[in-house]
Length: 169
Image (cartoon, rainbow, N blue to C red; front, top):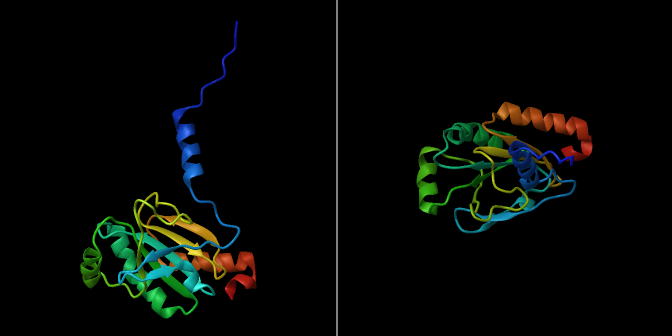
């Protein structure tokens, strides 16, 4: 009697594919650029020396809209943190501009190409998705789903404590 290898379940295969599709936590600086609402490119490397909170969002996303005031306040009140919004929606710039009248953001907004998102981050698995990048440009944390200012500040404090003062530059 011949023994057959057990088949991998679809769940295991799907999980493996999902893990392979996720961008790894960087051990070195990452960078990308995307056009801002005015058409000028905004690069992640423009913000070296600060913690950067990169936030994928869309106009139709209710949790994204709820996060915007706290992200704006943190961006305005913390000199060591910059928030960078990545609009992830296939629509016209005018739609984003109209949306931002009702949901203002004090931080820079770049438009991610939904068909070719920044390779350093990959496409979001859900919206909102937030990435924490240290002052050296290293991606240290990914948060899928809604997040508060307090959660972000706690994560940054924990990362600073774990990685030593060199990441608090």
